[in-house]
Length: 68
Length: 370
Image 1 (cartoon, rainbow over the protein chains, first blue to last red):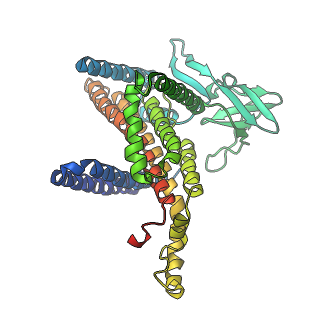
Image 2 (cartoon, rainbow over the protein chains, first blue to last red; image 1 turned 180 degrees about the vertical axis):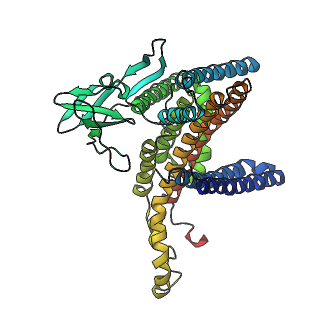
Image 3 (cartoon, each protein chain N blue to C red; image 1 turned 120 degrees about the vertical axis):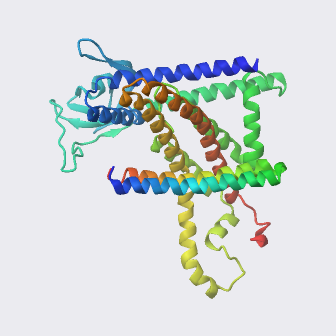
């Protein structure tokens, strides 16, 4: 792995981490405000997290396998 | 009662895990200089992630330096100007040339190539083999696991169905474990995303795909070394099914949303410049949805396997007393997380499929709300 690709992979992980962290944090706040809606909030949280994660993995694989 | 169950469960996980470590130990203990060891571990991990033509459980080198493989061969089915069927034991894990009829075949990086009696493989300047690759329909390790999972699911759910019919809808035995899961998929995945009216049609697919992915993910955590859901061909097939079902059950409203999203709210000359951009994006969206499904499942399972194998590999890189407990602890923790991920990925795949089916089967009764 060359250095630019390692930096790229790191940036991806930072971006995905910030994104999923924000979703998790906001979901916790939402559950704290409305505990009775926690089921729905969790579902929405998981879907949003999965979408971000999918993009993150796609980008990671693109950096890891760019040279084949 | 609860505690004994937990202890048994943890013991089982530990045992499974330990045997996985032994499997790695036998292959990488040979490395001497650091560089070789690293590339050997990488090669081992890559080999584990690939589909193979034989079901090998582990291999070891005995005192005389001879390599032994423990496992069983699987049938190889090739189409090469006629059907060629032979046992994969003829390929000797890529160490020998299989002689079938007038043709010779050789394994190179888990792919079968046609070659001559000496087994020469010619390379182009990028070090890719130039030999002819016959069409390969072999029953590989992944295919065996898919068959086994299918059989297991058939027997399990057939059995549950007869037990429910016999006992008058009262769950017994395994049914007590599976009933809440099935109900969860019906109530919280299918009904809440597709709607009370149409969810029934989609239930068989959603249940099948959920249990199929979940079981295969769990098999991937056992030391059998199967990586079926981490195989992009398998996830592609699953995503294609979702794609077909979404588009073939699409209602008029669904297609109107794609090709005429603004409806009658604007005259045609106002829509034209917008639609030049909107419609290609919507059409791309049809393909991006299943594509993201397949990439997510594949990448998650692949990444999980790589992480566990790499953490086990740490043991051989450290070469001191600190390596083993560290690598064991980390890999054990990640394995536990992987059990969660196995369920979560099955859930996400089912959930998003249901969401797409929900878009497709939408009826034209709340169009004003958009």
